[in-house]
Image (tube, rainbow, N blue to C red; front, side, top):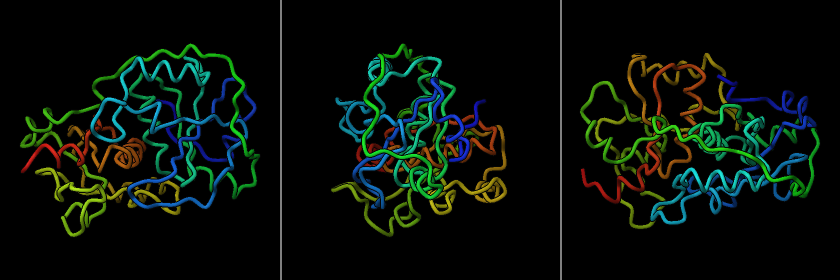
Amino acid sequence: MKNPILNAEELNEILENENTIILDCSTKSNKAGVQSDFENINIKGARYFDLKNEFSDPESIFPNTLPNADQFQFNCRKLGINDSSKIIIYDNLGVYNSPRVWWMFKIMGHQNVSVLNGGLPEWIKRKFPTKEEYDLEFEKGNFRSDFQKNMISDLDFIKKNIENEKILVVDARSSKRFNSLEPEPRKNLRSGNITNSINIPFENVLNNGKFKDLKELKSVFEIISDPSMKLIFTCGSGVTACIIYLASELILENEKSLYDGSWTEWGTLEKN
């Protein structure tokens, strides 16, 4: 398995490599209310990965839904991404959207993909090269999608397996949202959680915008002791779930998938 996270020093060493493609997946806002201190500044050579528009399903009634394999492939090729590309993903919040994009590439069959640990804030802190503009000069790529259906779970699957002791749903929302102590940020969406799910807020695996070290992560995930248990990660709309998904990849061998509809879908369609 390729290393799913990369530090700023490691990226700087391969920054000029022809095969390195750096993708900025920052968005202007998010439901967690996290804000960036860095606007209109990018890592040198970065290309913009438009998560909200080009890399979400335009026909879905739910936010941030995974696009189909053809749409993903088409837009990756527009970005000049090849099958042989080494892809590094970052965002301007440290670690927020980038694990979502990492998961998207993985589910589309691309293995050589990593998240920049600490993202743009860490890169700037280290005084590595930046630019105001994105890199727009590149040839069309030859990226091919190879959809890995085992990495995603849908509402029907969770409903059928909600009592299965070998499947565990892990929710990345805040404990107050999980326990219905504060309302959901999306209008008219009820509060609550999926039956038999557990709560590991995404903030618990991070420290100042970077993933915690392996010892600390083992402590966070000690509630999951059975390596044969399939883990299904969820959150509000499938973004922050990928943060704990990626963190778990560093220390757990369990089979893993993402419930892409997450609480936005479950809270709308299910009434348990």
